[in-house]
Length: 216
Ligand code: 3DU
Image (cartoon, rainbow, N blue to C red):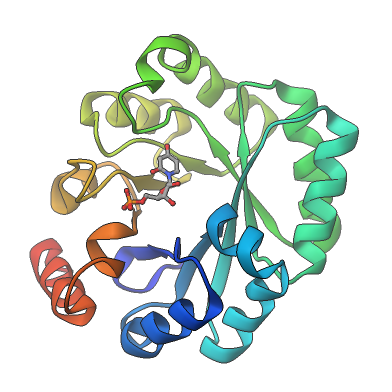
C-alpha cells in the first residue's frame, strides 16, 4: 500500500460532521485514513464509503477483528462490501481466525493488516509475550501487512526483522502516546496518527510540522 506523506489519519471523531470538518482541512496532505469503532458505531458503516467517495482516499477499517473464523469472515465480508480497502485483524486469536479474514480479503481484492503488539502500556502483560510469535505466524501465512507499536521501538525493530524488509508495517502510538514520528519510520513504512492531529487547534499546522520533521 502506498501512503502519501507516510501518515495515516486515525479518524476517531464522534460524528460525520466532525469527520467532514477535519477532512476538509487535512485531506490535501493525506490519501489514507483509518476508521474504527468510534466513527462507525456512531454513524454506521456508510461512513467508510462516504469518506472514501468524498475525499478519494483509501480507508483501513480498524476493527481489530478477534473472533472465531466463521464470525471473522462475516465481519470482513461486510467491511469490504462497505468499501474498505483493508481491515485490521488481531493475530492472538490464531491462524484459522486470521485466515478467514485473509480469504475474504482475497475474494474482494482487498487487504488485511495483522496486529502484532499494541502500543499502550497494558499490552505488556498479555500481548508482549506472544507478539513476535504473532508476527512469525503472519509470515508463515503469507501476510504482507502488519501493525506494530511506535511506543517500543526496540520491539518494533524486532517485528521488522521477523516480517522482513518487503512487508508493509504501519505504526500507531506517535504523539499523544509518546512515539516519535521520525524514529518510528526507521522501522515502519507509515505512521498512524489521531489525537495529535484532530485535537490540535490547527490540524493543518501540526500535520505540516510532522511532515517537515520526518523529512520525506
Ligand atoms: O493515539 P492516537 O490518538 O494517535 O491514535 C492511535 C490510533 O491507533 C487509535 O485509533 C487507536 O485505536 C489505534 N491503535 C493504537 O493506538 C494502538 C494499537 O496497537 C493499535 C491501534
